[in-house]
Image (cartoon, rainbow, N blue to C red; front, side, top):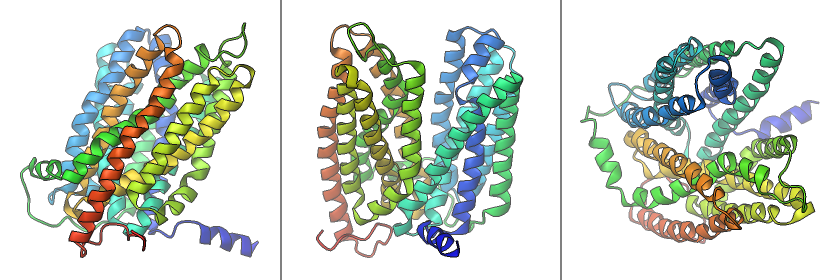
Amino acid sequence: MKSFRTQILNWLPRLSYQVWLLAFGRLLSQVGSGFTLFYAPIFFVNQVGLSATAVGIALGSSSISGVVGRFLGGSLADSPRWGRKPAILLSAAFSAIASFVLATTQNFSVLLLGNLLMGLGVGLYWPATEALVADMTTPAQRNEAFALNRLADSLGLGLGVVLAGLLIQLTGAFRALFVIDGLSFLVFFVIVSWAIAVPPPTGHPQPLLAGWRKALADRTLLVFIPVNVLFTMYIVQIYSTMPLYFTNFVAISETVKGFSASTISALFTWHLVLTVLLQLPAARWLNRLRRPQALILSVLLWGTGFALIGMAGVMGSTAIVWAVIGLAVLSIATVTYLPSASALVVDLAPPSQRGVYLSINSQCWALGYFIGPPLGGLTLDQPGALPHLFWLGLTGSIGIAIVILRQLDRIMLIRKQANPEINNTVDLPPDS
């Protein structure tokens, strides 16, 4: 038993205890978010009595305030007057208030206010949190550190969804879900406030836009932005377009079209479980590659996975096999992308500007999530074979990503050679 426990401890990432505490806090807060993730629209339409259109508008409004929150989060995280920790605490406070507002919602205006506050809290959260993870790790540890935090997010969301379903079945108390969500943010606030110690910010106060001007003048970052948006568009297709494609377009036989709801649920559970299991091993293996090389591997996996999903739509009785394999490949693509992209942005950023650089990285997610669902929905509304060809079109788009990533790799190698004293990038392999 002791030997087995020792092996487990040796396998786990060797990171600062504060990184582990931050991940634990994120897991708890994401459990709360999982409580409301799938049940909020059902509650506000069926229980409160709002129209589906009104609920959709209100939920979508969080993306608008999220853009503002990301801008402020990056700026505050880099500010000597604020810093990473206060920005995270502010995020948790806004998110907790938003949850309690949503718990009292009786009309559209309160629902809109709650979602605007939630978007602001989420926007403040990401740049500051990822900058803090970067501050507490060495370059060689960052793949695993970012993977650990993504793992905590995934586990928390999954656990929250399951527990929320049980609570609704037992009590039907939808409003309690939002109260629990708010309490989870308060627990996260306490953990960060009490257990996370960070050095005070250094440097002189600068105008709010100064860091953004410098970051947006970084040619290497500008090269990465379009391919990063493309990656986030890939990710959102799994959750926005693929369920509808599996339901309405997969021809299992001449008379049966579409997987059942239980089959689709099992498929996405398979995808989530595999993503969780592979997150840390993939991050450790990726340390042998340069960041752009890891992303090229990821984009090849995305292309392969989308091609397999397209095959599932036209392969008849074997559709389920193609779907299972396709979602497995997309799980590997996801865990290859997530830590590598965040670590690459940190590699590019001066330590004093990590918040702004990671805010730009987070804005790529906002843009990808804005473009991706309408693109997929518009394609699925087209007649004939276009819904099936959509996945082949995504596969073809990886050529653009590979060209950009190869150029990015060359730029980063030149940058490293011109500035050998810079130690915030991963060590290059001997053959580079």
